[in-house]
Amino acid sequence: MTDTVRTADCLARRLYDAGCRHAFGMPGGEVLTLVDALEKAGIEFVLVKHENAAGFMAEAVWQRTGAPGILVATLGPGALNGINSVANAHQDRVPLVVLTGCVDADEAQSYTHQVLDHDRVFRPITKATMRLTPGAAAIIADKAVTMAMEPRPGPVHLDVPIAVAAAEIPRQHTQARRLAPPAAPAPGPDLDRARAALAAAQRPVLLAGLDAVNEDAGPALRAFAERFGVPVVTTYRAKGLLEETHPLALGGAGLSPLADRTLVPLVQRADLVIAAGYDPIEMRPGWRDVWDPARQMVIDIAPVPNHHYMHQSTLTFQTGVAETLAALGDGIAPRATWGHEAAAEARATLSAAFPADAEWGPGAIVDTCRAVLPRDTLATVDSGAHRILLSQMWTCHEPRSLMQSSGLCTMGCAIPLALGAQIASPDRPVVAFTGDAGFLMIAGELATAHERGLRPIIVVFVDASLALIELKQRQRQLPNTGVDFGQHDFAAIGRAFGGHGATVRDRDGLRRALTDALAADRFTVIAAQIDRGAYDGKI
Image: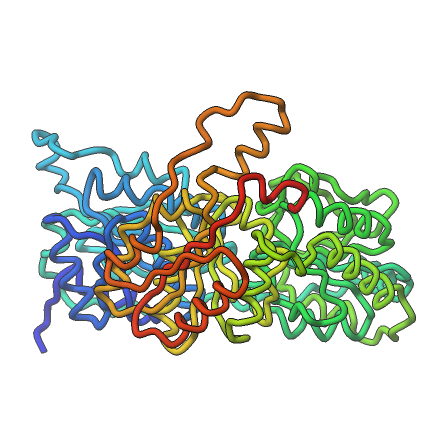
């Protein structure tokens, strides 16, 4: 073993030690040394067709493995192509390490081709942006990983100059910094007051979100809800923290007006609201100040201070969700609450609002897919009207089993999320739900699926319209403009890229296509044709 390594090797080793086994991107000459270092460290570089898709694939790998995702992009246009997925990671609290190549500082003084200030581009949409240097390579690498993973997690950008990546440096053995475990609330008046409120509560409700998911607080949340009879509402990305067949589970909130007509009044009637790892970045304006701390006891449990002002609370604990729920319940005798009765009433109302018995249409598509696909199917969904409907109707049995863009609500994420999920979990069935416009944005990644032998099922809701925007346009009594496009043969597109393809127009056809897709040796595109206006009154 030599006494020196390349700077890029030092960085790659730290990423490997963090659990990373895949990196996604499209190389340019400026990142070739970096890609070589990743491969030599045991991190496979996955070639994609667009850097934006690479970011979402990297996110899905994090969702499945817990290791930070890696996006690799060359300088200039490569870096800018990934911006959307980086901004999404920032808003959806995804620990994404963004590695970009750049020209050396001296070279940049007189060479301007493709050169731009990456730091200024990435700074507003990352937790930090840094430049790798030979002398502090191990420290910078550890900072990048640690800052990406620590609460709230998010993307960190690291610019790697060409000569710096290849520079030989002494082997550096910097001890990786360990993340501090979530803290329990300190004994004192605030904790005493919170415990007294729990002991007296007759109408408690718990709202859980991204922070609870990132802390793996599901088991603690379930134990607390069952012990004290607390109905549980989640954000969309927290679906499955409490298995959604559980009688106290009320599913996702924050985007569907139909669902919120039931869930908002329930929260407003509560005498105790526990926001357990609830990050309101997913929520729409209807959830701003949805409760009133002047007349309700509101306990907010979060890893960071409230700088969002979407809501206020009576008591705030900047502590771990599981640890705080345990401290709240310690020694408190359970009492009869409205829990199961209120939850049953709300579940019945929600079920009636999102009926599953339609002969055909978007709801029938979701219901058929959930019935045919195995219980352990990993699902992804793109932004659009279908996402609102599916996020209410798709039953999640575990957290992170329905992946989507919720903070940024960006289109074009479902297919790359599905590919990343299958790369990380090859033994799990994977389905991507996308609108026809979202599919067209990202269709090139079908080539990636074919090249890697991936077998996701891609269900396309086909109505030749930006359905959600068209619906809003009509609601505002505006003329139809810029929301319609042509009908395309999506099944043929799937076959052209080396997969299977089917077009369906009824439940029986969809069942057959899904059954065939589950047994297929390659990916399948199922084009499910629906009528224009099929979402009216349904989301």
